[in-house]
Amino acid sequence: MAYISGTFLFKKEGIFYFHRRVPVDLRQHYSSPRIAYSLRTRSRNVALARANAAAVKLDEYWFHLRSQDVELPGKHLLRHGLSRPAGEDAECVNNAALALSEAVLTYIRLKGQGRSKTFERAAHRACGYVIDVCGDKPLPAYTKADANAFRDALIERGLAGSSITRIFGTVRAVFNFAVAEEGLEVTSPFANVYYDRNAGVSERLSIPVGDIREVQKQCRELDDEMRWLVALVADTGMRIGEAAGLLREDIQRDTDGNWSVRITPHPWRTLKTDGSKRVVPLVGSAQWAAERIQAQASDSRYAFPRYNVTDKTNANSASAGLNKWLKAHAPEGATMHGFRHAMRDRLRAVECPADIADQIGGWQTEGVGQGYGDGYPLKVLAKWMCRATQ
Image (cartoon, rainbow, N blue to C red; front, top):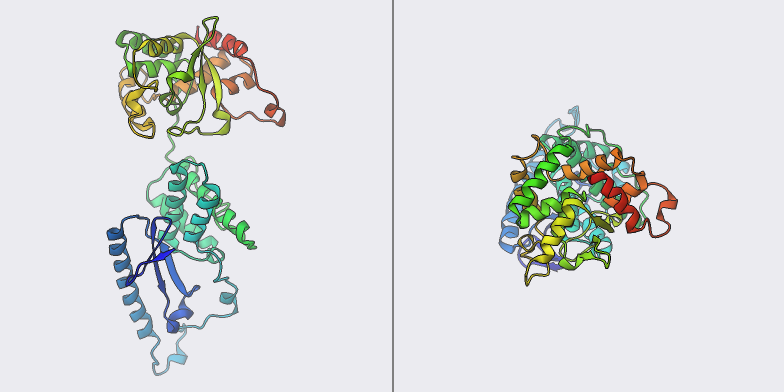
């Protein structure tokens, strides 16, 4: 931790933090003797501006508190004292406990090893929202009222129920991990907070088979890199990020002429879950796309170079561009993710066993026994995929 001389800043793991001690004569108004929170920036100039603004606000507020604490004639007769010494209940708050901003750093340091940058950003962002609304308190100081205020603030921002669920999940993970690490006997106030989880959530549409056929026809006619990606996803149900980050060597052909794709984590593209790692047979338009990709004379090792020009696969760019093109060839509201929903429906239509469908799509399979063995062989998967894509 490095303090910046002459300011209210310190720097920890590249992030600037605001830090200021509460004056002794005002500590009865606070549950902690210090104020510290993340400024959520790595820029010194931005951090200085934010820290100076915070310091000015504190000075004004502290002047207000001091003016209230002056001895007034008849002050003892007021119904509600303007100043009240902290009682025994306030003393139970463990001021030595980690503040939420410190809990985030602990969480990332211990659990973030080998994780993507999105893991770190999600933790900083979610807990940053809490700090903005409730302040950067020691963990035991957070209450159910804080959690409810946090929920209300997220709703006011217009976030969908699914987004609120994701943010609360991250906050709970950080809070519970830090509490366990510190050995505190604290129940998270961010658990069991009610809100409408379906609010603002749009249903993901499954693309009808007839429309899939039309899209595949257009892909063959246009025959370019973008359409190869569409064709690959259409008859595999792969997530678009999984497909966009493939290497050419991930697409293989065996001695019998059968094509398959190995979906595995890469430094430039992670997978959503551990179960997403799999090998999928390529049939129909997916096989055509594989043949076209491997037939190209290219110096790039990537199957889709246009989406891998930096050190991270640009799945968002692929999704935006292809969804825009898809509007002209699929029902209103359909997206590239609709092919994944459609693949599940197509497998159901041919009465494919659920555990086989789970293995094809990389979906979570319930039951302890499903974790044993290597899964179904490719020939079995290919049989059902051929039936589903006919």
